[in-house]
Amino acid sequence: MAERHVEIAGAGFSGLTIATALAQRGWSVRVHERAPEVRAFGAGIWLWDNGIRVLNAIGAADEALDGCTEAKVWESWDRTGDLIDRVQFGIGGGSRVFCVVRQQLLMAILHAAERAGVEVCTNSEAVGATADGALKLASGETLKADLVIGADGIRSKVRDSLGLLKRRHVHIDGAIRVLIPRTAEEYETEEGRKIREWWYGSRRLLYTPCSKDVVYLCFTMMARDKEAAEIPLRKEVWARSFPQLKHMIDRVGTDGRYDRFETSRLHRWSKGRVAIMGDAAHSMSPGLGQGGGSSLVSALTLPALIDEMGAIEPALEAWETALRPLAEHTQRWSKITWPLIPWPAWVARRYYAFPLAKGWIAKQRMRPSLHVAKGTEGHRLWVPTRAGV
Ligand SMILES: Cc1cc2nc3c(=O)[nH]c(=O)nc-3n(C[C@H](O)[C@H](O)[C@H](O)COP(=O)(O)OP(=O)(O)OC[C@H]3O[C@@H](n4cnc5c(N)ncnc54)[C@H](O)[C@@H]3O)c2cc1C
Image (cartoon, rainbow, N blue to C red; front, top):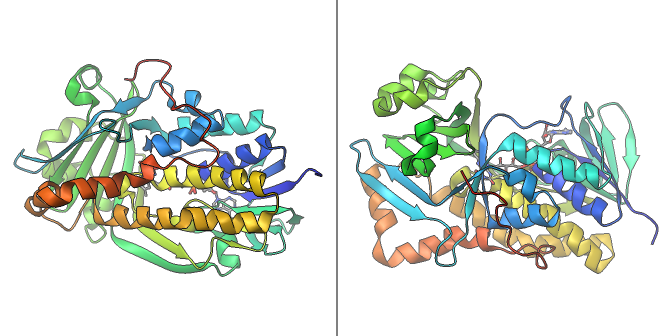
């Protein structure tokens, strides 16, 4: 078969993963990134086994997860210091969770893409696509391909040019994400290795250790809580709610990014020879920490199906049929579980502890992370090459 060619909009986690997977299957691949460089903003990301399997299959897991923290426990605490819930990861057939700095993850996938021969064009903005397989750029160029991918994030221009967006739900809450230096005590103690979350009214502060040197903090609040959502972070505002965490809040610098959570649904994930992928197709609130993992799964499943089926358009159909129910399940459970922002702590505590529901809820939440993506089946479960931190 003659070499096939793909044009991809967006060099984020989704775009670079599908780029790598297609190049490894003999395609010629070009990725267009609007920004002047391929770069992730300063925050951490939780990765579960579903995403790690994909990284392993494309040869990026060792670099992506080098020196990162495997979290064994997640605890949440109310304002009086009482426990709301405690979850242990990686036991009883459950998924493991690793906490990684986003830039490290993105660079690992970029390096895998480069090894596979992917061409990445920066300062190259996509403005739309046509169903017959052409990507339109802001420069005025139109590039023909066997397949076009819109992996251009939550505000996808490729998706919108094809009229594929059905619904965009803007949530009542949002978050500021930052990285701070990790202290020796946070590195050496059992407490410092846990994922921990503190609640104060509808404000939440989530602590996630990522590496020996770095901790990821996520400050969650209602969108109407304007002083809490300001960037740079209003340290005095947050220290007022969490005086016991002032030592952490004081380490926040002037960087930081605020996002209001959004869930999107499409009419279809593809049109003709154009596929929409990752946040562009199924953005979600971060309740399960699965937006990125689901994107990685989606980005490997499509190349694996094309490989198996040969023809592109039937493979696009099969890809959506295989993954859309799982993506919608993940969106739903992301919204209704953590961080339960409008709920008082005592209601959340009862919800988490409700005896009959506990096992069932845990199963629903765990379902995406236990999914074994097509294209990863032949690989063994990745294990760290050096001890976690
Ligand atoms: C608060 C919060 C916490 C989260 N935590 C987690 C977590 O712990 N675990 C997890 O798995 N997920 C998490 N997510 C979700 C995760 O970040 C996303 O699902 C993931 O980044 C989606 O990747 P993507 O490649 O599809 O999109 P993006 O990461 O948005 O990448 C899109 C890329 O396309 C580029 N681009 C945009 N427009 C154009 C254009 N017109 N032309 C060319 N290039 C363009 C952008 O510059 C960017 O590089 C979280 C999300 C939020 C909001």
